[in-house]
Length: 401
Image (cartoon, rainbow, N blue to C red; front, side):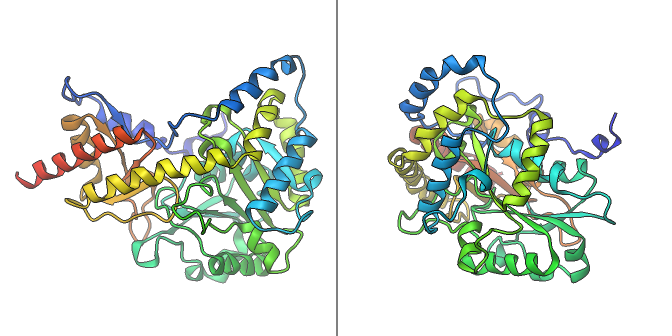
């Protein structure tokens, strides 16, 4: 077996299952799972209808490059969403459909990292999506963790990285809005990352799968390609952004997303995927086209998340210090002992949340996830309200001990 497999850490949800093993929640309370970022809103009906109409394509092998009509729809969506000039995104060369961002993010690192260079490094926020770390390890690179602390607005401190490490860096992962913090990377931050990329030659992989979940309709989060173009990098050199329909359209089971950016990098990535055999099924691509063309269901999706935050935050603030995130659908709460909190909440109130330390790594500056839990407000409004009531009761019961 590949010896690098031994470097992989247990996935957060494996650790959560082990933590909750043997715990017996009250039989009279139904389970409310808020640990996984799996959207539960009803998906748009037209996606299922398009999928059904496309079932006659099951007899066709998909191409790694994807359907030209899907690539064209994605290119035009990018231009509308990120205020890019018409034609700025070359659909044939700058867009590559993916089986969701998870598959794409992992495979991308395998294609991009040059392990023949000395001590390759992949830099990533901490806490982070564990795919970043696993992808780096299996590509033969060193994962380097940039702590996202409250004092810096949960933004990784790029200026704390020395020039020697930037020279070793081959990929910088950024995520905006962030998982689990909800922090949005401002344009000035993205400009700084682009300056460093130009100086040191590393690729920026921007995970933007939460980009369509934000509170203010008038202020959508900026994207990497948007800022790159504004700074004169119209070819998006060393820039690749990753998007998905999972969160945007509440269709995580569709496994549909894309990578867009530097045409030269995507050409090599397409070649890798040709051999990897992970082309997006044709019926999935055809069902994805109307989802990228429609914004009404996405606005409704955001409205539901706003409604949940509006009712849940005042409740939780009665007992906890709760910040309203700038984007995504997570709450990143300080609770003391995160493992004890998660197990106790499950045992007493049958609500599942994820210990923050499972999403982060120990560094000389500490583990920025320790003492926190991530709560995913993906359930219905009623379920989120009931979960908040149970969390308040649990916190109050702990205070009485």
